[in-house]
Each structure stands twice: as structure tokens, then as C-alpha cells.
Figure 1 (tube, rainbow, N blue to C red):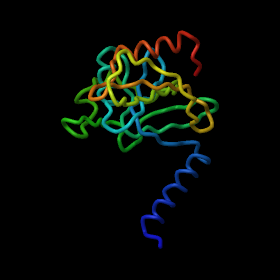
Figure 2 (cartoon, rainbow, N blue to C red):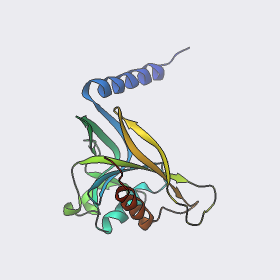
Figure 3 (spheres, helix red, strand yellow):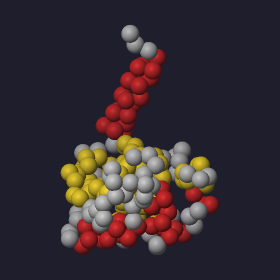
Length: 179
């Protein structure tokens, strides 16, 4: 027995697949930033603190690109990433809901687009782990391009430490992390 939802889901998946193969565009959920001149996509479960972490990184001098729906387009051998048109100038803040980005991030601290260089997966740990270090993961395939990726443990009931993200990104590219 099928339902209307099955047909809608199938149509949605087919449209996504066609968009990916023909237009070379896909969408992912996360927060997109530019740290040290590099495009960083932060992913993880809902409520893990991606947006809060992104806002804190911007307060430390990095640049905000997008929250929630990230549009990634392949141009040659590079991935150009930006906010989806629906959520481009919006940010989801738990206390306030969805608000204009300008209410919490100055215009000069934002970019409209960045080249995607690295994916960081925030991973909730069952119990706190002192000094949980970043662990390298298999690259994430996006539009047939392997994007370097690592996981960062987030303590149970807590949020990722901003300085750990900065250190991990800085050391990754210092060791020759490739675009």
C-alpha cells in the first residue's frame, strides 16, 4: 500500500538527484563559516550547537556565511558554498527562533559565498571526555569531490569549545590539508 507521502518523497529525491547530476548543485544541513581564509562546513545533529559555535567563532574574528540549508555548487574542481535563497540572511537561534542574520552578526563579518575546504562533524559523546581530540574521518564526497573531514567530540550537555575548533582547523591546514 502506498501513500501520497511516498510519491512526494520519491519526487523530491528524484529532483534532488537530477539537480545534483545536471546542475551540479546539492544541499546540506549545517553552518558555513570562513576560518583563516578557508571555507568550513560544520555539521552534526540538531541541537548539538552548530549555530552557537558559529556565532562564537565570528565573535573571535572569523566570517559567517550561512546557517541551516547550505547550497553547494561544483564549478570545475572546486565546491562553492553559500546559503540557500530561503535561509540566506537568516539564522536560527534557540532562544529567539529564526531571525535576520544582521541582528546578531555585523554585515562586515559576513560573506555571501566561500570555497568549501573542510567538513567538521560535531559528534555528541555519551559522557564527558576530557580533551576529546579531533579524529580524522573518511573524506565526505560532495558532487564527486572528496572534501577532507574530521569529527570533533562534544561533551554531553555541553558545546564544542571554540578554541579547539580554531586549533584543529589551523593545524589541519598547517599540516598541508588540501582544498
